[in-house]
Length: 153
Image (cartoon, rainbow, N blue to C red; front, side, top):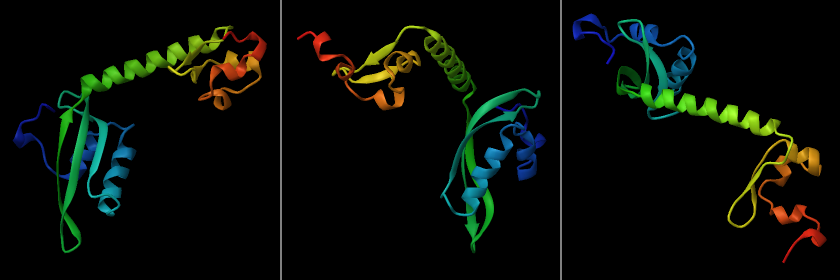
């Protein structure tokens, strides 16, 4: 997965840490440290790791320490390549962010209700027109915001 032969790669923790993407090293170190201080029985974390060709892939890493007399003597675990699903997730988050920006810049109210008429989405224009914040309106039935004379039976 990383492009190394078994004899080219060491199992030492320093080498492993040196292959982790600089933007991910703090969260990986924190997850492992929390496990080693016995806050959690194991760790599970997603991060980028450098391949032999210097490219990075996303991995899901699961592991735990083996203990002897209260001291960790070895780490065991596995990681799988999740690059494709992670890249799809990142693209989807970006698209949702763009869509949200567009919807919030529309000068008309955009809303979504569930099957019972409770508000489950409101754009930022909602407050401008109604005077109610989105946070206080979500979960309430849309009919609460329509004057009784304007409601149809």
